[in-house]
Image 1 (spheres, rainbow, N blue to C red):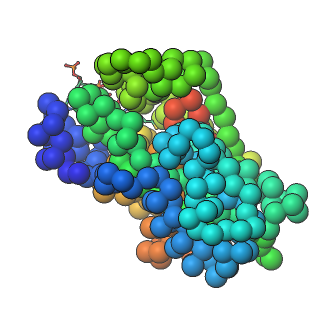
Image 2 (image 1 turned 45 degrees about the vertical axis):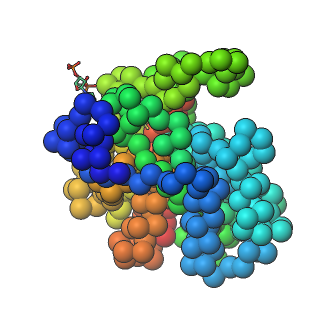
Length: 309
Ligand SMILES: CC(C)(COP(=O)(O)OP(=O)(O)OC[C@H]1O[C@@H](n2cnc3c(N)ncnc32)[C@H](O)[C@@H]1OP(=O)(O)O)[C@@H](O)C(=O)NCCC(=O)NCCS
């Protein structure tokens, strides 16, 4: 869906969207394609490039706010569709940081020795919860999925650190008010958009810049590194202006910051793993590189991770 397509639906323009967000197009999953279907495509590619077999995966963690069903978890649906007989599977609801929360949990569980090979997925069909009458939100988001396989490393590569934080006081800055147990949808409900994503964009913007910068700085500091040691920053793709502010604060040039927002918009939990995969497959990450991932989302919630590739 291009900005020109959106111009036909809401009062907006390509010029406004590109200049305020950096987004030119976003992917919209067709009717009948669930989050699990997108996740399966990403999982297949991740397992294939890891060299492992499906039976080797003993942990599957999937971050999403747009699950296939309220019950069971989408991770369990993916387990069945992928045929992962030896995995335990569960979802994480952490909006746009879902992949980093999954990475953090998977890494900690692997470190205990209880699990060996984890599949961590971020997948979203945000188009299913967007209000296409609200130009403040519908232009920002898209659908997609990304996945990574984590395993025990036999050298000094791996996840050097993760940082996760949230502030539930700010949850109403980005939320879907109706449809859960707090506000169930009664018979005869007529939607006025409160069963779709609602957002206070400029309030979120300020918190996002501050907390993503803090999260990125913290993870680098804690590892005893400086931004000069960082080969690539992979930020959540929410807004090019937020991404540029992070680069400025970290004092890294934009050629060390991975950006693909123009193609996908904000895909929430899928954003970081899609960017990680594109960076990896395009040869932007080399063995031994320090890579920082940083994300922010509804909760409000934010976090970062530092990888030695
Ligand atoms: C949403 C966002 C792009 C809006 O940009 P902004 O510069 O803050 O713009 P504002 O919200 O101040 O709106 C400016 C004007 O543009 C208008 N506007 C909003 N959306 C518009 C659109 N799609 N097209 C045209 N005009 C639009 C507003 O109505 C407002 O008009 P007004 O001045 O007449 O009231 C920006 O705030 C943002 O990216 N915030 C973070 C959102 C986010 O990332 N959420 C997900 C977190 S993971």
